[in-house]
Length: 346
Image (cartoon, rainbow, N blue to C red; front, side, top):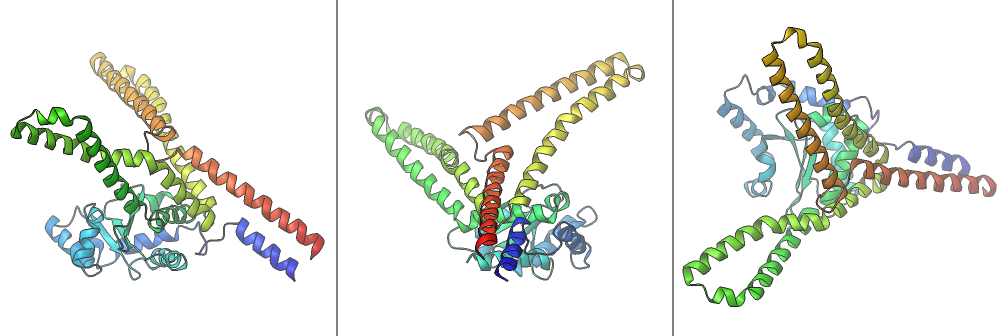
């Protein structure tokens, strides 16, 4: 009996058993479609057919019922993205998945936001002070991801809340601000004394502006990648969402590859259209293609620098996949060793 129970446990862990059943049947997408078509909310999502002020009013009526004024102030960044709050009544499966993780991990369930427009292929989470925080999940992310991948991304974002990454970043930013301010005051103390009151005020304003701009950037450069890796680890190690996380990063890589492939296709279409275009139009279209190609190359270079150096806050998708695969391989080996040991000793 012990041997049978061990094999069942090995199977459940190895298969990445989800909190929800039938991971890849796009149940969250079906739930999203039902939410958008509901009589009480369809006008909010059909923003082309609704008078803008009335649409916003309907959205605010729904949102204001869910959070207080002070809570809205703390979550203002999410409201500014034209969002609607998801509840256990509007998207019960998505809400239950997030709520179950939070209760199991002793996290306050965050307010769940959904952008009312479709183009947002991402998710983000933030928690200020001791509030419950908020998580935003893009419609396009739900549409383009399997349920397993979506759950893994959500698990990653909840890791940011669990480990208080935003509050820690703010504290580090404030510390960097005062350290740099003190250093500047000390180094240029004699020069500042030579300035009259008006000049000193102008220099002080300029100094504070630069410090306000660069202190958050420096903070992200110091801890950004570390926090992302910690949130990844929470998703694939604590919540066993490695398979979904790996799938999501592969989707990101594929999207970049699709962008790259679109240039070759466009070049072929342009060449095949030579006989149907005037020489002037053909030349101008080639110039546009050239500048698009240059822009894309610069973007790829910038993305490589962002992912592979200290100048970016996120590791590359390839590096994150490698970390997940390393953990899954180690986990598989441990399970195999436990299985072999049980075979001889049970």
